[in-house]
Amino acid sequence: MTTAYLTDDSFTQHNHPQHPEHAGRIEAVWQALGAAGLSDQLRQIRPTPASDEQILAVHTREHLERLVAVSQGDRLVRLDPDTYALPASYDAARLAAGAVIGAVDAVLSTQADNALAIVRPPGHHATTDRQMGFCLLNNIAIAARQAQSRHGFDKVLILDYDVHHGNGTNDIFYADPSVLFISLHQYPHYPGSGALNEVGEDEGRGATINIPLPAGHGDASYRELFTEIVVPAIERFQPDLMLISAGFDAHFADPLASMQLTLAGYDYLARECIKQAERLCEGRIVFVMEGGYHLTALAHGWSNIARALLDKDEISDPYGSPQSGINSDIQSLIGQLRQIHRF
Picture 1: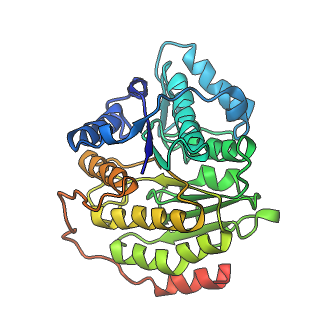
Picture 2: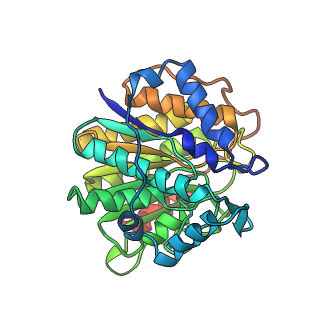
Picture 3: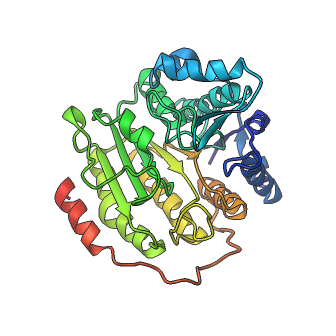
């Protein structure tokens, strides 16, 4: 089993130490992968920046020029109350998108069986024309279009289990039946989107599946939702490629949300995704780093994804289960999802 691994030291140049999305996040992941001996078992591929053409397949020219303008300055700029950019951020964002493209290229050209892209700044909140939610370019959306335009793989699944709704990815593909977007997220929570009735529009109606979870849900709820909703949706869609927006901010220790997933629960999600990829699309799957703001949980979570991609059974989990109560009432939500999406 060959797993491509794309990352780069320059991702630390986009950094605001007082902000939740800082360079220490990716440094923690690098350290954990190295300490576990996993980095040496991955096929490291040096990423190259996304081209204007690749970026503009998803974003407007104005969106890109906003980052160019910041790169020509000499100070930190707030693009919105949550989202910062520095002169170095433009290059980091282009390289992050390029790394996810490179991961997709490696898998679809059979250089690797699967891949992980450890990148920042993250991407899933970036809409066609707006940077937001810590995100500058929508890395996974750009890579999905690359899979279609360069490789001719028409049907792409994007599964997002970051705790925050991937509104940017949702909006970019909202009318596109060739990309199935599934999001499990805390709701209501930032950015406020991702309701049950957001199902796509026009030809893309039904190709967006939003699974909004109240605070407090943990491993059992996610397992049941995967079994009853996510897996049937993937089977019905029959993807050529699976892309995973993996955020570890639904872990119970994360400071920016209120979900109760454990690292063992996250490991189940990753391995179930890999299993479905092996069953339906010859194992073609790429995991892309999104959120996660408890550094230890984030680092162990990505080490576990690497182990799963390498077909290793063990996991690392220094935290175990949460001490607080867990919301496990999920049947009503499953019933609504079945009715809306006709499972």
